[in-house]
Amino acid sequence: MLMPISNHELPEIMVIDILLRLPVKSLMRFRCVCKSWCSSFQTSEFITNHRNKNLNLLLMLHDEVPYFSLLSTEAKIKEYGEPEVEFNLKVKENIHMLDFDQLTVSGPCNGLLCVHDNYSIILWNPSTREVKVLPESTISRPPATDDTYFGFVGFGFDRNSNDYKVLRCVNNCVLEEDGFAVLEFIYQIDLYSLRTDSWREIAHPDVFVYNPYLFNAYINGIYYWEATGDDGDLILSFDMVEEVFSTLSLPNFGMSKAECSWCIASFKEALATIVHPRIGMEKCYDIWILNGYSWTKQLTIGPILGVEMPLGFWKNGELFLESENHKLVMFDPCTGQLRDFGIYMSQDSTQQLVVYAESIVSIRGSLEYEANITREVQVQKSTLRRPLIIRMLASTITWGWLGCLKRIFLWMAKRGYEIAQSNAAWILDKYGEHNMWMDESGLCTDAERHQRAHSLSWQASEQESKT
Image (cartoon, rainbow, N blue to C red; front, side, top):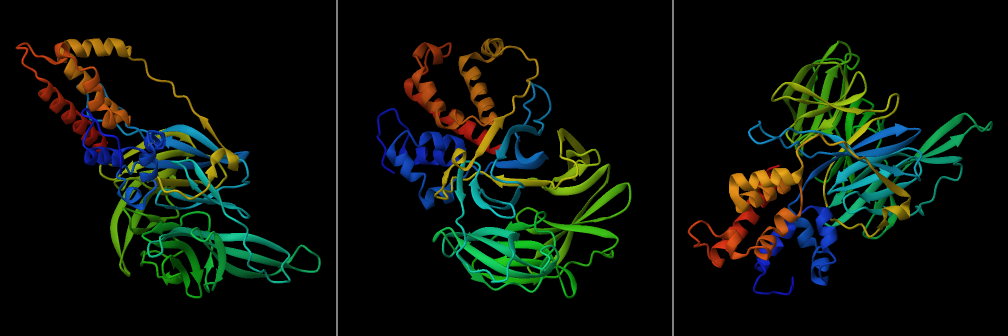
């Protein structure tokens, strides 16, 4: 990476390391700094080594038309002397996709989402706001087909060919002569390659995916769906590298199908089944983890009172659920606490919670507005606190100018401000006159001041990586 170097700039290797730690939003802004940065952000090496994997939450809701709510996962920073930070969720943005009558997400995969309904499919990077509308398939349909729509959809990455692939089941419907009753369904499997931007047909598995819109999962190059075959319920999988279907047997839940409900999910980068009894005021959730080709019962969560259905897992195994009064809640198995975030979910509609990591992967698409995707920012009412200038003056009196600025940068790192990492040293150097940085003895030299500045930058970086 070629960059202009001056006497006051950080070493190149340190600059690269700082850039690799920044959020995607900051990298998108920094593309305008210089051409070398812009081109470097697009290299596979930079994309692979990008270490800011902030997790984000998308909640699919429905209000006349479906939309996504992007949830803010920033921790609530408490006042000095109070206990540690408290995790909280709030609606940050509502995202409307005007070209879709319904919304379903397949993935995520490396920060990318595959959004689809019965007739359209797009690839979407919500971090870079890039959208790729997939082309129409040129695969021939059976001549007797009266109607065609999509069934189950899968999305993943082929690490051998460095290619993203989309798999979809095409349901070809043949009607009776009256034009209403269904005579038969003819199924086809279409496979899309982002590298070639084209579709081709592969063999259809001899099983039926009965829940194509919820509780499917992509893990380490393999996509999974809930399905049923001749021997009952099972899990259907598709290997993105080998391009072959396989089936997995379910673990022995200790209950009959009539007595329990089950679903699949990603649990700490492993395939998991979540099982719970159908009846009862309190619910216990058994978590089974797939290890190779065998299942292991990892833990039991609960009993939990007042919840309906599981939605997915968070970073450390916390379980998101929909409550009986249709609100988003989270159960922490370590503390045994049920958190209510005050976010209402749509009643009588399909719910989907998507956990994805930030990514700068390009899909060679267009901007969101060109695909009729709009964002509505939700303004949150802040709690009443002392004005910032008063808090800064109080901090200055207590800790001095250097201590005050250090606390500000650490606070900014917790809040996710990119300036805390990339510009801490620059700000200190720019405003670092001798009289500001000298102690009572007046012996603070330029070298010591620069060393303090660089040390502060790394402290801010390490603080942000912990939050």
